[in-house]
Amino acid sequence: QTTRMFIDQESPTTEALREASALLRDGQTVAFPTETVYGLGADATSKEAVSGIFRAKGRPEDNPLIAHVATKKQLRSLVTSLPAAAEKLINKFTPGPLTLVLPSNGTCAENVTAGLSTIGVRIPDHPVAQALLKACDLPLAAPSANISGKPSPTTADHVWSDLQGKIAGLIDGGATGVGVESTVIDCTQEIPVILRPGGITKEQLEAEIGEVMVDPALASTTEEPKAPGMKYTHYAPDVPMWLVAGTPENIQAVIEKERSSKKRIGVMASIETAEKLDADRIITLGSDLREIAASLYDALRIFKNEDVDLILCESFPRTGIGQAIMNRLEKAAVEFVEV
Ligand code: TXA
Ligand code: MG
Image 1 (cartoon, helix red, strand yellow):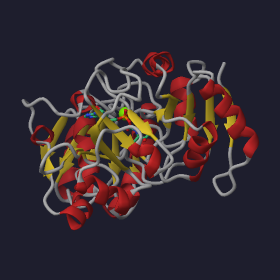
Image 2: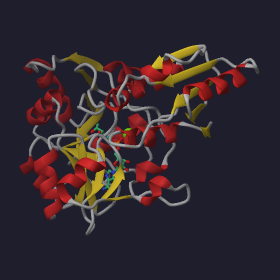
Image 3: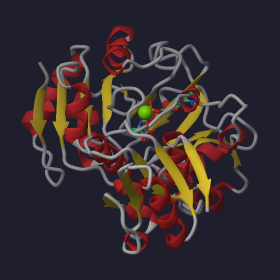
Image 4: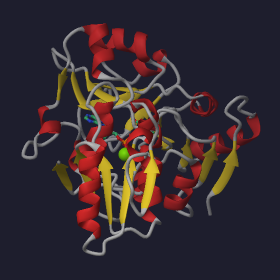
């Protein structure tokens, strides 16, 4: 039985927070909104509590979790040292959609880090997440609150449909904002390395600390990624999806060709592109890349319930948050088509 609690983002009330905190302090799992996606939280200092997360999600044990904390002071209490670059990034971008990989001091349970010597830490910028972290006064291990392999949840309903009955609580605080997960940056290297593109862009990071690298595995099909979670197929809708790069006219030609073999075609595209296309089902993602990021996972989930045989998704520029969008779409797609 999962208790669903409602909290108004504008004024987080204490009743639901108290109830959720009690569950967390009792070693149970509670899903809550952050500014990126919903997270599934548990006491990061308890191995048993953390194993509840892996169980509920069906998550591989070798995939480490991010520890969420409310303050910089609490963040410091989980790591052995803060390199100068990490300090700068924390001051500039947290609270916010950035996860720093730092040397762990062992405060968190060993299954949080999947046995690694490093730990991913993040201070979320969402009033409900902040209020919850303060109320329970624990670091919370929290992966995205989806069944492993599904798109991350950006609404409480997404969490409910994946995890209802498998977790103790769900705090419904409305839709999240950013829509894609936090950027994961490894700060244990001389030059910090982006392990997962996300809400804070490479351009933003470089403006603050100079050169940053991107894990070469993200652009390769043979290399093993340094963030264990990046090696899994992810975000996949139930229907095959092609990522299509080309003019609206050329995308339409692909639609016609596939339709001629009696396939029903779904399309995911920007408003501007969608206006020029005709398909059996069209989901518009917004106009600019920020809007597209915010609606991406919901669109992937909507197609799960649509009667289509093939989804064609427009390919987007890899600038700014486009890097994160394209990373997720490449994982979700079975084919990349240039026309
Ligand atoms: O926006 C987010 O980051 C959301 C919200 C809930 O905070 N959380 C999230 O967690 O996306 P999750 O578990 O779905 O993704 C965490 C990613 C995985 O790819 C994992 O492998 C990587 O971060 N990661 C965590 N700790 C790491 C570490 N010590 N070294 C390398 N990669 C790590
Ligand atoms: Mg995830």
